Length: 143
Image (cartoon, rainbow, N blue to C red; front, side, top):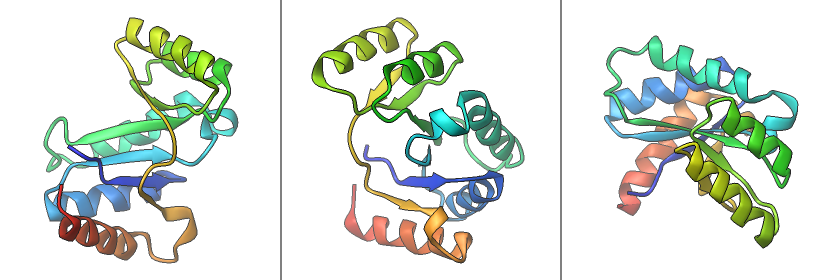
């Protein structure tokens, strides 16, 4: 299944994304902004996603994926994995990617690479309406 990726910058963005996902009854991936592992940290991101999900009992288990962007910094990627992040986006060179993937596998985690087809809520005026339009556009594309 392809992921409907929504990039968040704060708790309100996560809440808007989840509210629309619940209304549309679609699974989504909540992703951090690029390099968020460097300036916000894994713990902050995990807590924001956990809080937003906990506030939505209408979200079915397993329908929200959280993806922390670690840029091309292997130290950030390893730190995020050690802190319990289960999916990271990592864009290092091929050799470091292989190492990060091996480490992620040991943690039961996953590594995504490259740009994601997404909407960045940091670039919109109305997060809820933008999420709605994004998810509707996605549903027209098909899986």
